[in-house]
Length: 277
Image (cartoon, rainbow, N blue to C red; front, top):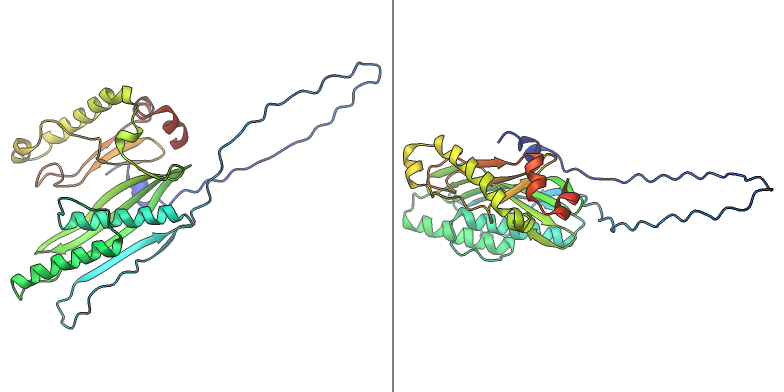
């Protein structure tokens, strides 16, 4: 990912407002009629959301007691903020990511502990098949690399070692609207009248990406790439879509689609663009 390096590794950006006022007094000559005072319209601004004050910390989870050397290994780093809803949103998305590691087809809205319990159960089932089978290992790290007004971008990275298959640096992206307390999908932010334009951008990038993959991938890949529920992110330049390696088709490379600033302004809802960029 090229442009996203600034997004992935950057620190969370906080905004501050600098208010200044300057009073001027003018003395009018006594022989001139008194001028009517100029009426300055009052500009109402939205309430400023409190600073998140993000704190990194290990997740508080319970795992079964293990007396052997072949024990499940869970290392989950999480975030804590001053916003209770954001904290819950982080936990629920972490739970979804954990379920995705064990390919739960119908993912549920679980707490982090509930998702860990499901993960441990799957690891136990794997070990019961053969005594030499190694318990699952999972490392999860969470960060908020970018935020703008009410919009918060969260990135979750995962390393796993499951059933003799190791995966490194698998990334997930989620965007929240703090003001409406809602997780946003790509469909939520795209102007309905610009969906055709957005689809054209996506399909052109997808066609170019397919050419860089092996012939077997090209043969098994879907003809059309659906983007409405895809992971997406934003930075100071525009928005982007992220497809993990193997997500579109098995053995395929990851795909990142970046929209330019002009394309982003074209396809986004006007109010979203105004507050996000």
